Length: 223
Image (tube, rainbow, N blue to C red):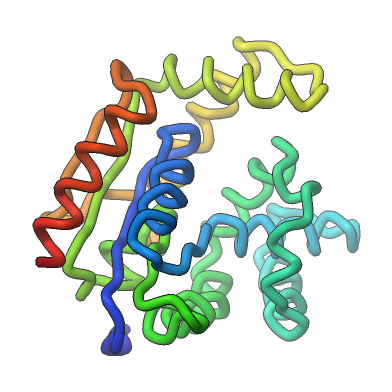
């Protein structure tokens, strides 16, 4: 697919779940005065629509129908629904996102946001799993944020438990490994680092250390 030329600076941030990419993306967007889009929330929205309708995530057509319904009624306020952050929605979203037609449906939303961020923002930060490779390959600044699976599972376990969810580290680790395998192995836009992306491993970094490294790279690329 051809990409839509962007009229505003775009920062593409990819990486697996609980790598820290969401927090970094928001901090970078706030610092630079850019709009931020968590593209994973779009797939979570489609997954949530599927689950609400009682659909089967292993049924490709059901996933496509749910994504189309989500697209047809899309409003940015939908992405703030706390239900989208439930772990079961995230697991379903990984399955929904593996359907090529679903990714096609949601492609325009992402590229439109990147090319024309809402006023008064002067640029856009998109985070996801295929931003630098598929959605915005022309982005001048690309980062791939990662961390060991064990560290990411520990982070996600603490996050879910802090929200009152009854989860164990062992279960979260297993789910994360399965999700990583799906995301990296899918035929449609697999999760891989763009060739010109900065690969930033946050396993041994706190958020401030990771942010300073990421911001320095972004400023260099945008200068």
